[in-house]
Image (cartoon, rainbow, N blue to C red; front, side):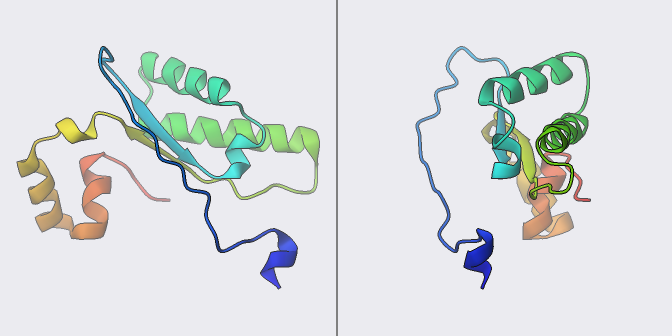
Length: 123
């Protein structure tokens, strides 16, 4: 049974109000427990903001988060690494013109339109 291995069918869901007043740049990090078990929210936000400030792309920042989490797992256990899933999105996505979204949907289809609009790649 998958329940014996820690897999459950009920997701943890949280909602909150996001106030970006006064923020010029914001990002959303959506990640599995493979990231959060070994990196604190402060470590993650510092790493992302430092990399973006240094001119790195969202993809590079995501890859660096994955690498950091994997390294922390190796310090804890040489033989096991939990799944590590990270999605990093620009928080000001709602500012994108509706025409750009509609064009992306027309060119790419519904599922991949958001990826194109955010200039993301799936590997």
